Length: 147
Image 1 (cartoon, rainbow, N blue to C red):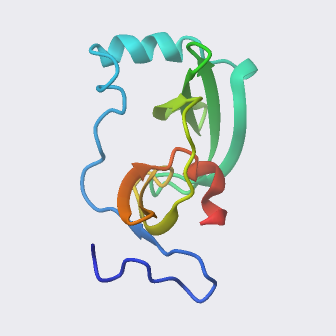
Image 2: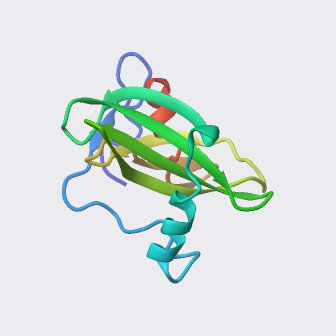
Image 3: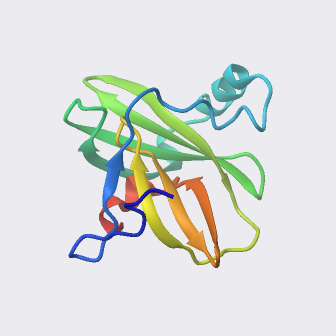
């Protein structure tokens, strides 16, 4: 654990740190062997009918861009969130990640937040009881003001 873990700003919010270097790999390599085929299948189902949120915010040091989140259901317990960004007249895939609807929920104590360079994904270090876990906060894009 770094020496800054757990330090908070005066406002009581955890400071967001910027990750330097290369972006992470695919979220999907763990669940499907042909990632390109899988993403083509999912992206082919993206439409205005499955937009769950839209916002305008900074993206990849390009200034504010319109960003849309689509939720593509695969079955009753697994969906894929597809995040697209409008760059001029083009819609570009920014990220996509699995969303699992089930299982137990645990309350965590956020200790560190690491923002990836495209500014819509973060890795969280959190305390769960006596254990520290790291995970991707797939809702960071929509709740950045709440951290």
